Image (tube, rainbow, N blue to C red):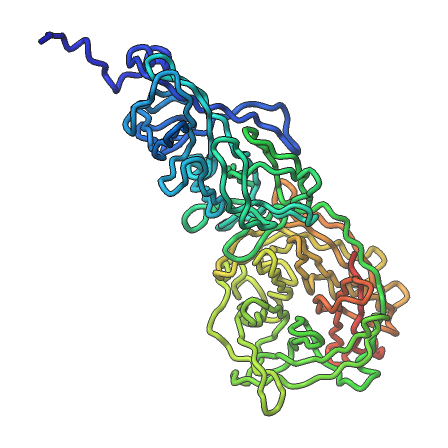
Length: 596
């Protein structure tokens, strides 16, 4: 028997350097190597990053397990070895599975998988989750490593793992406030797919693929991560090493409502094991937008009665819902508009009733938009300052659409309330983007107390709550005018990348006592604004009409795609039922534009 003092025992809670710890324990050690980071776009010098396991990032955690096996006349069990000390990337481990023989060759791998065969293990890169910005803890199940090592005369060994995976790091700036649920990296060239499942040989590191997909997915948080506009999030994920040098990637940022697609494609690379590849994305649109006037169709001259058409939404191949600001009830009308897919000309247009059970009172419907995901219409009423939802169905007997109020409305901020607007002023423009899942609305004139010509543009998420609010300044009236009769915003259209086309109308009396009407279409980017939150405008198109051919365009929506692949946009005028300035004749028109 030998007596000893308490000083001879190692305090496992002491913060002891790894080298001293190894000497005191007289045991083997295993090291996690760092990733060499490669910055792919918009970043500077390379660095190194150590990825750890368990609940604490960047280091071993006490209790982490890796597997060890050897192969000679007999094959040892696929057994787990346990890390003894956390808090560093270098740690001793215990021989809790079997004792290693002296001067023998062994193979180690991480993470230990009791279901794997001795020399290979199934891998599954699906189901990755980033709990919070920069969180590394959930990479443990995807951080595959291996090493071949030889024990010394005492059956001990110290070794550094080889990494078998590649690390992807995304620095993403949120384009809007919202709940973000996933990040998708999608190969767009169709030349290489991500290996999602397969087996990896821990002796050689070779991968045998089973399931592949063109998209690599990382979920955000348990139920998403809340981000403010301009807030940056760091997302980590693992992939198996593959040569993507012939690929370009689209980076999608999912929300509860839709998907933001990064406007710039990201470069691919030959993703090597043990290297990390970092990308940045801010989701600001970069493509140039061009509008071209294509054709115009006179509804009135072709037999359609004059109306007070204030908004239009595409709901089918050649079917549209139009809202009339003088019609009782919901104010909705069904239009069928046939457009020649080769020439882009409107061949014919017809109008039908939309049935409803709304009270037959006037609400001054000014704008309408369609959500194809829910097959519902949303209509804005300036008399009540509400934006409400309608289900849309077809009566099988008559073929007419039936619109029924769902009792769901957007939650309108108080600044847009009826006390800030006269009854015939208020919400005049409404649009919805199925891509981003955002509604956008604005009024035709400023709210009481706001600066002259300054409107508020408000976005809403599909949970009906307001998101971001911006300022929009309407142009100053034409200098040649004697009197300005109209100068406002009448419509908006949300593009796929989140930008908006805004329609401004100006009607004024000239020095020669003629009425000129200018319809101006502007491009604005809600995710890129001036310091005070004012939207910056880029003029796309100017349509000027004189008093013999008055046309105030108050409706805008996407039309069909033409045979040449070009996307059309339809503009619809409001003739005020034939009322005009200076007793000049006016009609209703559909103008076809193409967008590039």
